[in-house]
Length: 428
Image 1 (cartoon, one colour):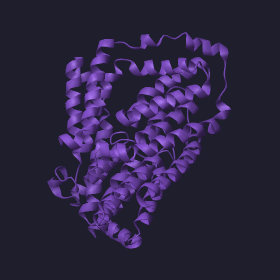
Image 2 (cartoon, one colour):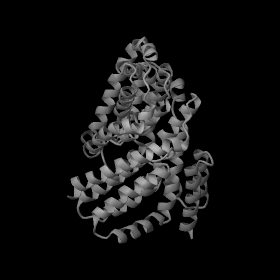
Image 3 (cartoon, one colour):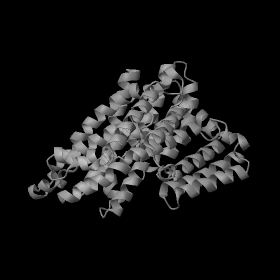
Image 4 (tube, one colour):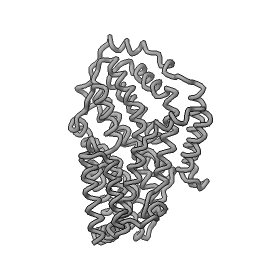
């Protein structure tokens, strides 16, 4: 009976999160509270158990990176990069789009896609306004590029953080297994954008000259702070890469980096903490408690047993099901709660596979499907929602279907390419 109650609470909460009929933070807090009051989570252990409670590695990794990015933002380096890209493109719309996508795709694996969009999107709107061209195509292209690029590393996309923590995968593991296909998919996406947005590419020489008059150097408000921040950020990224050697969790690296960044920048702590997305962190914590209720009452174990019996010993079928299933479900629901819910099931499947390499292939198929599925609709990933909010506030509103009609095409392309990659690398 407790399993049915836990499942009912979770499904109702998931419905409100997916449809955005209520604030997602309020939903997860109410659902987590019900799980606790009804005894569906393992008591106080929910705060200490990694598999039946809050995964603090995920929470503190996000917190540390939010603080680091909040300080870097004060230097104006992202404004500099956007203006530089606009001038390098000489106001040519398609060239500008490619350069903005490239900046976004390169930054997302290291700063996470949500943070990158929050920093790059406002500047994109400013440049498009100067060129008198619609900002919507550029914002949509940036979000799609960000979700693709963020798939390359452990910290680039929130689902990867959850998968890495659950599967014991390191920063280097993601670079070795995810980055190659991400580079290929991004290259194909750059070519695809010429077809998808070709009607939006209108060049105006007069307005292009106005952009060429901008001085990107003025965007750097504090050069000395920028140098110090880049040194610390480089050390943090190196710490992520050496995670397997040093045996220090990425969450600790991020927190230490945040502390050092605060020291070298001499920033006002209270002002920096206001930049932290506390609602996102609370959402994660409530979500983990909801999932803990499913694990503790045996719902996850039952689903895993059923899934194992369905795929049998054909692990390529299992990988295919995970890849396409995650892409489809991730496209219509926020991929963060989807991954948090499904990760324990994948863990159960992998535990039954004798060959560790084959088992790891299932994790990569799962991650690729969830990450690329985040491009499917306007509500499939947090970066999408953030970009639509920025667009609306700046007078360049993007509707659900305006985003989705491009996102679905990109998701289909990237998922098919990922499927071929999984087959060739792990099963051929």
